[in-house]
Length: 191
Image (cartoon, rainbow, N blue to C red):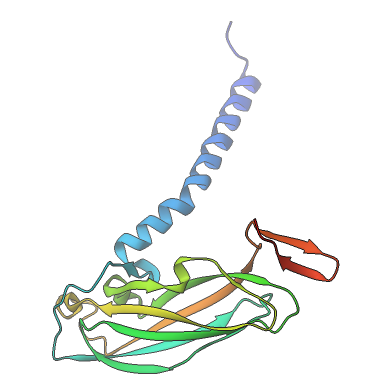
């Protein structure tokens, strides 16, 4: 039995909607993978450790911090700028404070500028790899260990980079399991 023209049109439209939904669902993980692999948009790489090559050439690393407008924390870099040799392992800290009377969970998003340097900026350890929970009134210093890959000096677009800015933005997220609401706010439970 052959379909009528309106049935063919409806079937085609349903197929297009399903295809578009599938592509939309796959777009975010694909884009994240693409950015990690290429450094596109200032996305940094993750490394176990520096490869050990250290150049005599130095580079300035600037640190920037912000919070989403709904995030109640204060969040700042402990140091604004450091100068280090390319390939050298660096360590810096960011400070976060929860001024509220409730625990607040946060997740940091990040990038580097200029974007061409993203592929060469490698984080070894970072608070941004995990969710953070600050108790009421708590202040913490969170470390970032990193290095700039010496291959940056061989990249036609990135070799003239003299300064890289590492930026983080904290966003409030739902508290992880293990926290329960009580009458006077939210407190951590023990399991």
